[in-house]
Image 1 (tube, rainbow, N blue to C red):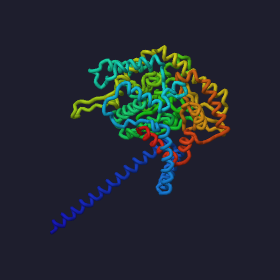
Image 2 (image 1 turned 120 degrees about the horizontal axis):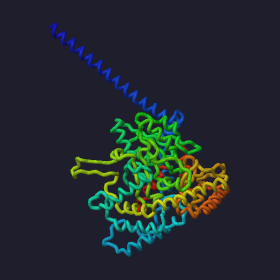
Image 3 (image 1 turned 90 degrees about the horizontal axis):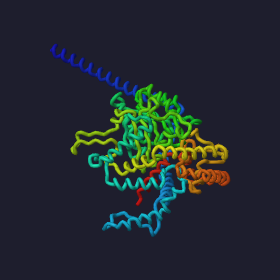
Image 4 (image 1 turned 60 degrees about the vertical axis):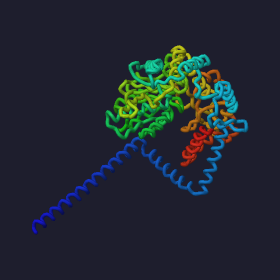
Length: 547
């Protein structure tokens, strides 16, 4: 009996010990989760600041409340009605209408002749009001035309390599060679002949691959499983896109309101043990200004992280600025700390659309960009970029464009384009007191905002559109920019004259109904504004695929 009682006491003791251990474990887990979340909150507050964080929380709460209110049938009906009107307006602008419009939504029973195909293309162009309006030189960026002679060279390259695919280098060895040589030329242009890189389908893929490479590098060498990156608010939107695609937290730091450069102190405050990279632009898309790449390089070296310099828009302008006689600041691989640079050959390199280059300081970092699968049922698979098959014809066209232009051609192009941009800046400063230039853009982009209470720059942008100009609207601050191309160069005086007339009309008869005013004004009007703009943007994307 005593032995039974002893066993019972011992068992009770073990249960009590187990319960105590379990309680201790629960406490440890709770404290771990609490400390982990507290650390995340601290990092966020350190990066964003108390004021900005409070504003974010308030806007989020207000947005949730409004979204809840929109669930009421009466409110929902009103919103659906407005979105329906917006959708119809978008379709009216993008989709050809009328009884004479033929819609090709099924394969023809028999193949059509080349003559029929060309005739039908001509008809579709006519339905859209023509497709050569860009030749007037009134488009901001978008069309980077190197001239009719270069176009012919590119078309000839296309014809020669139409079916080629660099996924099969043994079948298309010339394309492999040209692909490598395009990268090599760009590396030398950006002063890193011993570096490494790949061609891509455009600036978006170049940036995405850089994010992928830095993230994989940080995981492999630092054990970072919750990566973060720090970018100036002026960085290209692809960094937000990449953050969403790859599950990376992004800290967007407001730029200096006067210089429009990255705020180095605030960016440094946002760096923590999970940071994989910082970002700078040379030049950025919104206002065409250049960040302090040397300062960002010091941060990258200090914290042993990556520094991506986005030169997609600067492309074949920035490397020639100094030789062309314009003031420049360091931006390429000569800056200590720079680990990657993206450069769009299809912009000021005048290559065919669909080509860019991502460059790394060394081949080791490029390896983290690759995808390799050794266990696939289809055999070994390895690809250097996101795409598997790629158009060898575009690579051939790019190689041809770079050789056709040469250093002298790009230098002359830089002088003409940047000279025109500087001319626009000077004329706005001297002749248009209602406007001011954002920052001190060094290259091809000029952004202007209003300092006159009666002049809404977005209204000015809409009025410029009525005069045939396709400019870009900016949100913070409300502004408009023009990306000067070779087509813009002979039209500087016309641009300034139309800008003056548009400002006069905006002051005398503001309508508040233009596309820029309506869309960007909505985005800034209330907590729900960005959500509504997002729905309109979704409707726009849907319309792109309306046959």
